Structures are given as structure tokens and as C-alpha cells.
Image (cartoon, rainbow, N blue to C red; front, side, top):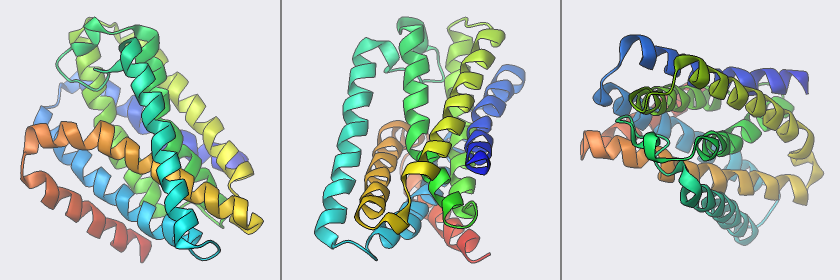
Length: 240
């Protein structure tokens, strides 16, 4: 469980690194969008080959599909609630956070990291952290940290406050990964397989709601090619 906590924290630490990059170097929106699209593709590959495929080994297609939808639905409801409370612009790089509620922005950032951290804990349970998944988490969290922190900087959030926020997210990510290790045991048959499917749905919803829109807004039609490149990278990492 300690190893799962460590890898969950490592994956989420890319958010903190992204924040520091945003405050020190002010990266362009295009750089952020390219890395977002690549990270999305890598994570989609992990969902397909390490969650859904594994779940289908012990459960029927119908049950897996149902729990994928349930996972996506739960994430979407949580995202909707937080958006209404002031977290809707939490990833905007131009300062929309100035109109939001600080607590909602923090909670929204935590919510975004829960699905991927859960799954990281599961891969540790299966014998070792998944390189494709870890790579995808880092590639998605780094630009997320840059984009969100660029907006927080534009909204006049002091760097210390932003660093404390991301440190809290890193801690929660570690705890969530440890929980994934404890609860998402695929050897438990029905429960494990359905938990995998649920986590897959939540992760897909997170990608569609929080990463792809920002990437497409900047990169336009080239976003699809970048996502496909990330998916191909996921296949390469899986072969290592």
C-alpha cells in the first residue's frame, strides 16, 4: 500500500511541477495544449488495455459497459456540482479563476485526479506500476498544472497559495492510490472487475470534460492526430 501511495503522489506531483513552470516560465497555450492531447491519448490506451480488457476477463460485456457508464456518470455529476459552485474555469490559462470560488477550484482539481490515482493503485496491486498509465498521468497532469496555474497567476493568486493547493492534491492522490490498492483487487472476482470498469468510465469522463476541450480550443483539427500519437505511445510503453 505504501508503494501505491508513492506512485499516486509521483503522478500528481506533475501538477506541482507544472505550476512552478507556469509561474517561472509562462509557457504558451499551444505547448500546454499539445502535451494535453498527447497525455489524453496515452491515458485512453491505458483505459482500453489495462482496465476494460482486464475487466472483460471475468465479467460480461454488459456488466462492464454498465459500470463504465456508472463511473462516467458519477464523475460528471461531481464535476457539475463543483462547476455550479465556482470551479468551472479552474483550468482556464487566462484567469477565469478570478470569478470562481477558491475552495471549489481546489476541490475540482482533487476530483480530476481521483480516477487516475485509483487506477495507479490498482496497477501496483497487479505486480508493479503501469508505465503507460504513469506516463499518461504525468503527461496529462503537467499541462493541467501549467494551464490551471497560469490562470491562477493571471487571477492574482500568490505562488505560495498555488503551491499549497497542489501539495494538497498530491497528498489526496497518494491516499486515493492507496485506496485503489486496497479496494480494486481484480482477484476478488465480480467486485474487482466492476471496480476496474467503474474507474475506466470515470477516467474517460475526466479526459473528455477537462483535457480535450482545452486542447481542441488551441490545436483545432490537429488534436485528433496528437491524441492518436499518444495512444500509439501508450502501446510502445506497454511493450517495454
